[in-house]
Length: 147
Image (cartoon, rainbow, N blue to C red; front, side, top):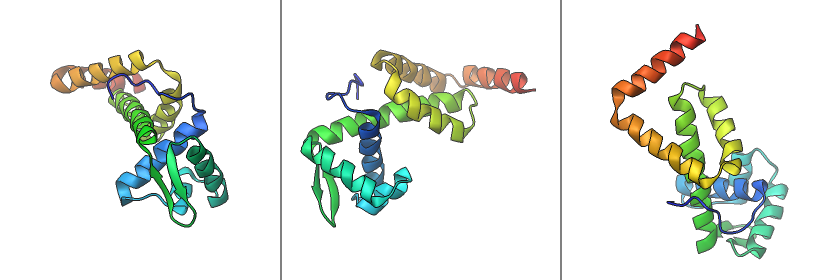
């Protein structure tokens, strides 16, 4: 997760699918079509179409009626995307962005920000967690600006 670079040039949609497959796999231990469809709020037929594309790109292995399993490169890309998303969401929550907005914005930003920017944000979060008084100061200022 160090560099945050994504090896293949993928569409945002493909990256979102890989991240959803990872989220479902981490929760359930496997990723079936209906579970990924639910995670993304899409129809199972749309999910099958993308599963086939990801399979053709050698990122996942798709088996009809069984779902998908990651191939090594697909897993690595999915973990990178999740790392970026989690880092950005954590940062936005830290500066008091409401959770639903933070999640939606992190989804957008994970595709747009340079890996170095994400890395610096991650280091900033680490510093904030090591210095609770500074964190409280920032959150206090956020509270004042809302009034």
